Length: 292
Length: 144
Image (cartoon, rainbow over all chains, first blue to last red; front, side, top):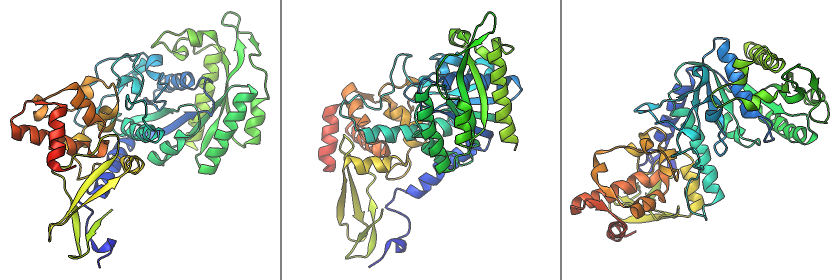
């Protein structure tokens, strides 16, 4: 009786050929992007998307071509932050045109694919859809958002990760050349506790960690620029020392960050503020890591 | 996965035409021995089906459905933008809401084949509208 290897091809689906084609499509897209950086945190609500958008703004200000992949499928916020509305999608044979946000930053987000701004991401409207199915679709969606977007030539693609550390497995397998991950925490004990897990996981998986950013490190008065404590917690620098990763940014909370209207980024308006300078310093540290 | 016809000792081939998988992620696929014509059916449960669908491929070979940008996302999202949907010559056929919902429940990686089967059946029959009744007829015809 013949064995597996004796039978040429497969059952007629050419699965290997299809997988190879999908991989080649993704590769051709990624090869035009110099540096891919994931911005993540185990914890939600630490300002990942806001930091991502402002880092993108700062990079763009320095002359880089920047794109953002909003990998937070269920809580996308990049479109809102960079002022990309629920416009008509431009679909070409070779892919979907990315949204053009503030400063020409290219964006792809689930928000761009949904019928209206208040439409949730649901893969089926059946109440008994299995969690496995949803998880499968999410992985497929990330691959398509990366591979089917006409990113063109980019210097940086920032990946705004969802809360938690589970999606990094997915991103790492799609982008093996990922330059690294920026971990973001706030000073609270709870946030640091959860971010520690994310850092440990990245160490174990061999994902390079660019460094730790302390967001909302202090409160800075927008009028007199005096700083004060916002959260009680362990010194975040100690966490970076303990986990042996660079401490690359201490970003104060400025109320003007949250007051920015859709499409107006804090960094472009207030780059000379204490918080603006802290964002710039973080970007310098990311650049140093990349150039190493 | 490959299937072997033991008496003939030859590979069985997936039957692209005539596939009409079950909805709700359970799947039935037919394989045929080219030599003796013997057919078998491979039955998978929803977990097995989901595992394959993660590859983003289509059984029976890639169709225009999977070649379109954001194919899996656009065809699987409950409420995707209209412009994401693929436009094909057979788009003149009208799908009722119920028929559209039913085809959406077919796993992505066999949806292209299932759609083709339904469309071919409708064209052959001279139907201009695809509804649930016609889909039932297809299922009855292909014996799935």
